[in-house]
Amino acid sequence: MRHCSFDLDSFTPIFFPCRRLFRWVVATVLMGFNFVGALDAQDHTIVFSSGDSGVSVAITNWGLDTCWPSFDNMQRGLIYMGTNNVTIVRVGFFVDAPLTNNDVTPADKSNMQTDINLARMATAATKWDLNLDSSIDPWYQSGANTVYPDRWAAAMEACQKYYNRHFWAAEGFNEPDYSPNGEGSPQNLYDIFGYLQSSSNFNGTAMEGGSTLNDDVALSWFNAIAARASIGSTHCLAGSAANYVNFIQSVASSNAMPFNPELHNVVEAIIGANYGLKGGIWWGTAERARGDFVRACQGKRLGYADDLNNWTAAAVYRGPNGAVQAFLGGSERMATTTTYRFFSRDRDVFYDGYGPQRAYTVTVPGGNGYWVNQPDMEKVVDITWGADVQPPINGRYLIVNRNSHLVLTVPGGSTANGVQLIQSTYVGALYQQWDVNSLPSTFGGDCSYFTIKAAHDGVTMDLNAFSYANGDPIQQWNGGTNLVEQWYFQYAGNGYFKIRSRWSDKVIGVSGGP
Image 1 (tube, rainbow, N blue to C red):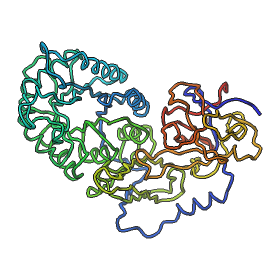
Image 2: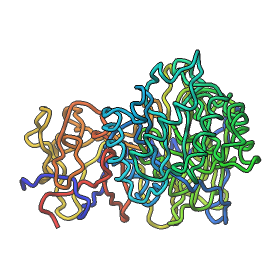
Image 3: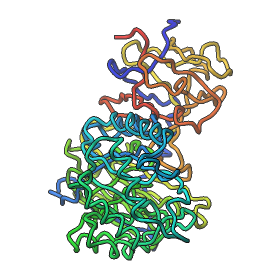
Image 4: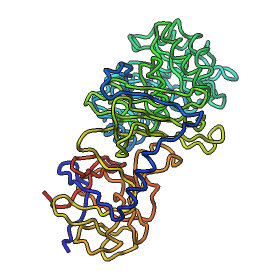
């Protein structure tokens, strides 16, 4: 047995073939997906042809947020989106204490320095968006849900001076329709923008608003400030998809830019692209579905369907690199269960390896109401064809290193957490066999990943210590729900895959291997 540990390596990837131990499982799975029965009345079909020229429905302005001040959010978003595609960063201003000599507090400056440090990670982000990121001190409030516009604008100007840079856009309020926030009225926001536009520090800065929580009221807020705003913005944490569409189209018809500064699910981008959204900033981070959509939508869209009543949508894109992918999503809080059926008109294809076939069905799950049991599902599906396509992945496997032909092994058949995995000669042991299963759509978030569990104890393959470093160990850990315990498979041809970490996007390699 060669005691050579498996590790994560972004420079010398090792490829792994999945060789199934129980061949009958393959037949069962393939028959299940090849059979196309009568369609449910609620199915939505996306018809596409791989050879079509497609249509351009790109969103070209993409960003990440520092108002959730997380190094991991920024790092992982840049990894999955590609640093060059992150052209906007959102940073905070503060109204949680009165101004002293027209300046904010040292604590607020410390928070802004954190935002600066995170924003600088996005080296291609030439557009900075200034956004409210604090509670509201009574010194700024003139009454119930009203503020002093001059004081508010003075705080924004004090923060701009600390940042010491030109801002692409300024959001005066953040979710002002959510009454516990204690923000001001549409008239207050209009007046704040007036003060900012008279300041040389905001010369050329686009006024943006009203950044409502509920898209049902977004248009009324924008109409109240439209004379001074060149960007109309809303979130989609409440309200209907139909009103989101109406907002986007109405803002565009007024010659302003429709923008979503806090995208919570890829469905908001899929629908937004179809109806004219020009930019978006991901809340939290971007993982595989979001990152791949950012890239793919710069190519051509081949098919689309939505159910606005259900707050779900799906689309097929051919990216600039020629890859064809399907994307699905459902609103974080308002989605209703919807089934989407992809149908290839011009040829049999493989959907994440299932095929050859024309049709493939995926269900976007819903929940039980506002923020109750909402799975917030989003997903990407690779669509391929030709002589060499990936096989489907689901079941029990050996994971065999392409260079050494040794198999991934839990040393000694240990069941302990933290045991570092090795490669060794296959002896038929269960601790050398792995159950590889995709995340269920009800798991929540991006479901484009797999768990890999040792057959002898059900313990999950895990990246040690949430690491981004090359060479850190791969171990087993009794979990399965942490992001470091989830993986995806990038096909490398001839039946081999790169196995990539959901956390870092780096590939599993052999320590010291070629």
